[in-house]
Length: 289
Length: 253
Image (cartoon, rainbow over all chains, first blue to last red):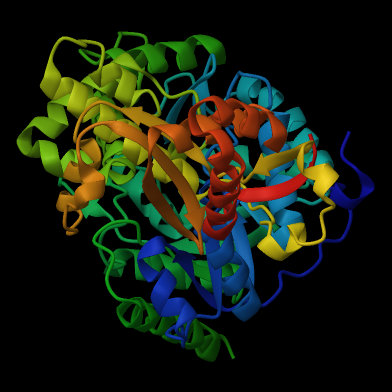
């Protein structure tokens, strides 16, 4: 059972207004610590990169945390995997959270491995009653263990399953209703999956419960014509900015995070892209006023 | 398809490649085979990339030969680690499986050296002992003195010029220290991995102390070969280990 703090019926705390942040990557460590992070309000650290005993990864994370708010973003919880939850891993996540006091802890609605083998990918689930019944108690157990709501991200996907009984956003909404978990809405992932599967991306956004979205993600992708791949190696595309504007209209000025994992440019270039996100969000709010 | 069946079929396909099984190709959307190939390709690219990050000099040294070797490892040794950073520790053994090939033996030792550097890089933090911490130790306590070493310390016994290869490929200049083979020490100080050669006597002494031997036992072991100089030699090494930041604590053994 979820703890009272995670009761879906309980009033949610409003999301802290972290502003506009950037995924923390080793390529930028030196520039950030030299004070080159102007225009970046917060950082999102990949949890697994810092689940180490010590040395530079923790030293840098501590130093970044002294400068800015930090969020921990995991990639291997495997909340949808059939293997038992790994409480050794979760204990390490909990210890890291006690050290850096992240604003929240996120991971992905996906599975990453099976039978002890980690495939190091964010693999989609079939959106079935069986999968929901499997994931709900696991989310509840993780929230109980971490003592906070889990924030789950929608993944980009290249395949869909005939066995799916509902749409991805309906699955996410039901998961929120049953567990009180929160959502990290990756706008680029919505766009990528929409192109690959043909659903209406606006319907995806409109199908998510308003109060449950804690954070937004932005990233670039590669358009191969027949399909789109979530490569995180290029600036955010126009189509995704348009979808982002819709997300801000629907969910409000949520903390927004830019991800870049390949062909990583210097920090000022990414700060400029974040400034564009600010403009888009400000434009939406100005029109709404 | 049941969740367990789907996940196991996906794992088999990603690890083995080929054509995705018909159970997975029931996926909605006509080009299911092409879509599944995105995942299969990404699996290989991602893990080969992880290995290249962990073994930067080995991958550069191998050049065009790197990719087939790394891919061979990826296909033979699936990851069981939550963090990709922990993947690839068996690469040295994988390369050394054909022990008769001297080139592979050298590459295997280069891999072992880079894995030791990677391990030292983010090993657990530890306090380190200062020479002054031992200043007031009564003479009778030295006999029973035992040492605890920092968690970043790694020991390597090499037979090839792997370290010289690493140093040259990293932009350094090979020196006397880099003659082929020998006993090596890797650890972390000031957030950076460090390494140095150990002469055989010092390596034996360090290994003896790491295994729980006391300072008195070390002196006794040195006595046969070094006689009256044994205690001074042991003290000299201890001083160096402390100055290097290798010793976490000292106390009754």
